[in-house]
Length: 474
Image 1 (cartoon, helix red, strand yellow):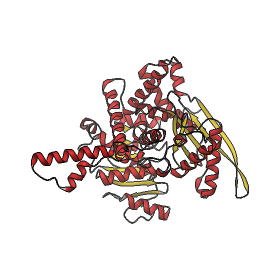
Image 2 (cartoon, rainbow, N blue to C red):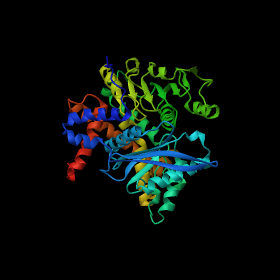
Image 3 (spheres, rainbow, N blue to C red):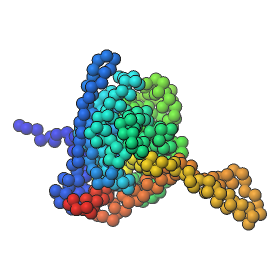
Image 4 (cartoon, rainbow, N blue to C red):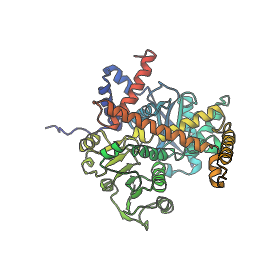
């Protein structure tokens, strides 16, 4: 007798099913719905590279989900587990994410099937430059049409290599620096991009806790300070989110989950010390200020106020969703909660802040970097000293009117003009605040919407549909 147990859904299927709920709320026709969900194009490349005298063949992908806005935007992963389904799912999420936070990009994603730790720096540079060549030749890399960024297994170094390769392939393109984002600052990057996604997680939580009704709905009270947090993954996103929340918002990071286990300290873990220990020892086992456990997955079920999955997709599934004890789940990773788990958690009344919102900080600041590259001027260069002059005149006026001298420290703060990093953080904070407020408004105003994830998808898909309707595609 055939099994009635549903087959395991792929990452792409999970994303599409979540989108389907929003499509049902919007009442879109089936043909329109299918057109919105499918990827416009998917490139697979296979290329040889000479590694230590032996030829190795590498496989890579670049998917474009939507070109309703240009360029299409999305990171590039270097990992030994990537596949086309994952790349297509992430490209779709990028389209929805950009639409939600009003970043005028389409969605794209890339990946190279490789274990970066198996290669030295020179070999990785050779592989990255060859992959860049393949993308550029096929029309999947350009400041105007398709702009990659760092993701799992890549960073500033790889983006610098890609930008330099593109420059040599297209020496006539004066905007060549805009072909990728996430570059080193000295090579056209922007201050604040490295920590942008983690900073966005912080701003998302800060905005959530500004709404007392939402906090109460999540069975919590008070502000963000003092809340107990379990975080999975101390990579770029998890590290910065944990660091900012613990150091600036007085949050207690009571557990950090990594590949080889979990460390727990109910009084709070020193995030920076944990990271330095991992860098030195290649493991969290043995960290002196926390209790080590081998079963990291089990730690997702710990009692806490906030659970932040910041590692990979598919971490909370129907197998463990009923055992999750967190009051609020903040999806810092892409797709950490499966469709089936999402249904279970919603039924249990656990509030989830969706990935399409929470980890949008990276693409938001990438947008700022891209604008900077195309404008060929750093933010604040023209107005900073003018703002300082106005501040100095205001301080002088205050002293004259009150007949009191303003202390030097306060005077310096008053007259200080905004730097590029100040403007980047201000723009990111504003973006996260407004996006949450839009989700909240959609949730409260539409009886068919019952959770923040559906609200986010409704907002995004409505914008995508309207953009196509406006130009007569539908």
